Length: 109
Length: 112
Image 1: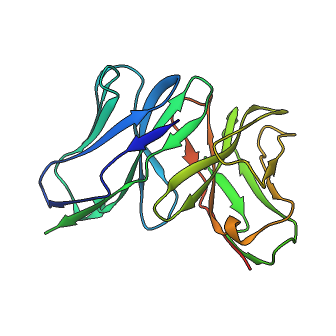
Image 2: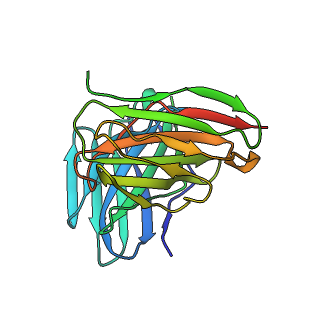
């Protein structure tokens, strides 16, 4: 089957760095995306990896290791507004998407 | 402004009463998709479409229908809604499918 596992909750201090991990089992795996969602609003795209390695976009970076079926999202210089839910999503060669159950990030002062 | 729109945003209905949730995008994207989001389950893909007249089942298609007669529109149809279809629904689009998806604002559906 298809599954993506990520921690349900993470708490971090404002200004710090936090890493949210995602392990996946997706047949025909193509790439891994990350989305942010505030309080049931529309998910917004953060980052995408189709190849192994690190992708950096401002304060957000994402990493993928295909051999380990593993990826992570790295958030630097945490701000209070980063408190939200973060989802990893795997896509396959059939153009289907499978989302993890989400990680609720709480940033504390 | 580039966007994905959904209507209605909120809907309360009764079991068995057919309903349609519309989705429209103005970015000339080929790929469109519907998801439902339930507490503790993340987003699950219902149906997706790679282009006009091309639709495929996602992970949870039972009880839903879609159509793609025009590139910009991708309506979700519930022929006979049941209470287990009470959920938050999102429409999304992307240029060709694998990369960035742009999500609509969501439709909260309650089936009594």
